[in-house]
Image 1: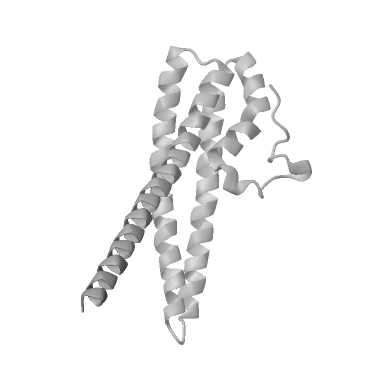
Image 2: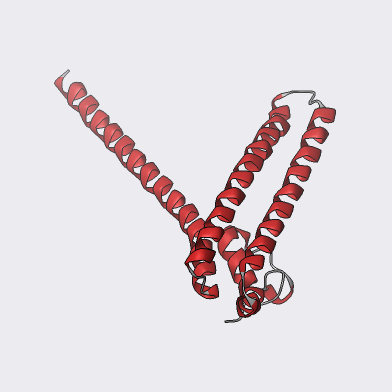
Length: 171
């Protein structure tokens, strides 16, 4: 009886230890992913301000543009997520509603297109903030800026010769 109780306590200690390790790892990984996303967003912002040598007035206007862009993108991402949920929820059915699935795909595609349009317009407005020297620098670093925004998981979306659309970044 005592041996079984001791064995049970040892097993219980190991189970609790494994749960604690798993919990700590989950927290650590979650923070790392959050920090990476934060670094990508603010890395692009910092990169633009530094590479283009924005003055205080330009920084203020740029910050307004960034806030607008982030809000628009947040709204679109929510719509994309909802449509992806509807799309993939059809996998739960033995006879999926293909019409609903195809409509979800069409919606996702439309929202992705809007996302690209919004980002294009955002950078067009950022470029409009620039003086003529800054515009030349902008034209050179836009690829680097986009790579920073997209993050490493999007390296497969490169153009010819491994460069992002728009060619290689030059300083």
